[in-house]
Length: 302
Image 1: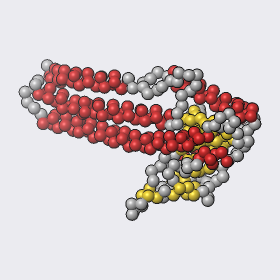
Image 2 (image 1 turned 180 degrees about the horizontal axis):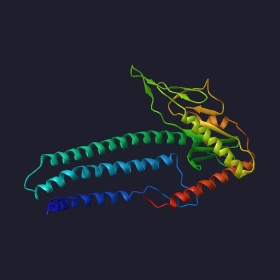
Image 3 (image 1 turned 120 degrees about the vertical axis):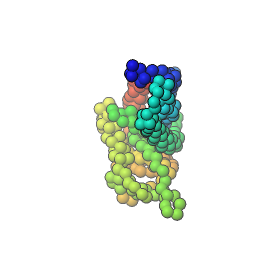
Image 4 (image 1 turned 45 degrees about the horizontal axis):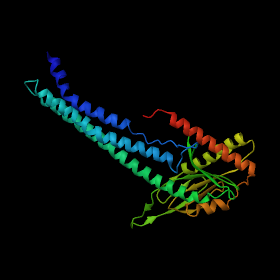
């Protein structure tokens, strides 16, 4: 029967399928989520980026392990066919080789994508940790009631940091951007801030300012609903490592490099808070972080 010539070589693919199954089983064991043993959400600076970085490493492992297995499958099948046919067709072997080549190119591109994504996430995480460390200097005893929240979840996105001081509430967004290089090999680290965009040496962006204003809008509306009174929220965009020119900037968003961030936030007074409102703001933010963390932990791991 002719169809047996195509069916029987599949036997040689069973060991490779078993190896692929082991790879998938090992990937399913990867779960970096950690639950706090105390009655409080476990949120660290850059927690969302840590989770994305874990997922990126998981994809890198999957593509790196499955790539060779899947790419060799057509050739292994073809060699199995050699045992069941008398005459070899060069067109058939060309098809196996072409298919293997396409699979190799595909997985190579996936690995390059994963590598670049991991580099970007590592840079973003490093900046998040640097800003988070700077913000930790705001934490004092009860005589100086400062409070810092990291990775505050909203309805559709995450706010990097929310800082509550006696003088107001701040939304702090962090953006990591690699310094530009000129034709002489020198670094260009100056960014011009305009009302709706950031002008870097070789490109411009609007989304960071938009995302900061979006966080301010959401948080101010949400706090007003939960506290019953308007709460003034100030937006702060941090660009670690960059020299910031704010001569043309809009006053609603403060754009800084991140150095002396804690001192700058201590000196700003967007809207003084009474003791009652100050405590209420901290309470509702803690409650939301706790609820979102419990909801996240209750989801089944992939």
